[in-house]
Length: 161
View 1 (cartoon, rainbow, N blue to C red):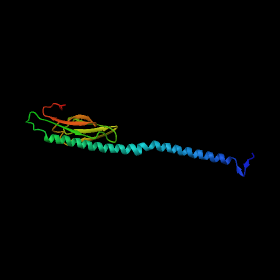
View 2 (view 1 turned 60 degrees about the horizontal axis):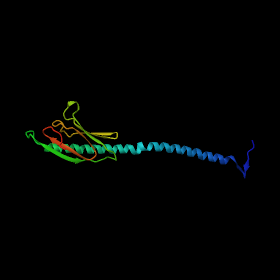
View 3 (view 1 turned 30 degrees about the horizontal axis):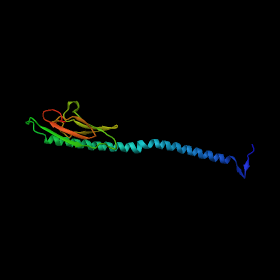
View 4 (view 1 turned 90 degrees about the vertical axis):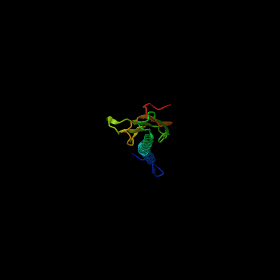
């Protein structure tokens, strides 16, 4: 086969350079797609979930402290009518996401195992209820939005509206 030359250059050299650039660009595009798929779980979701977990622990400790404070000032057993109502606010969201706060009763009837469970968007955190679970039954559920209320009613009734 006879090669054609134009001004001393092989005509196939231009095509081979173009194909080489297209191949390299294709490989780099594949690497870029792989990196774009891996960035959110590693660099965004991991730290976001860690931040959320620590914030939930802080919120649980704050709620536990408020419940213990209410327990400390609650009336003695001899008083027939005792009602204490306190309103408090917790953050409306953590990292742009809402959450739910549950106060779980004792597990398996074992006194002192009450927990505050804060959960939302696949992240959950449990905080012990600061040692009052063995003497006082506590329970309830609330969301992160709005003002929240803790009540002590010696008659066993619920919170007034």
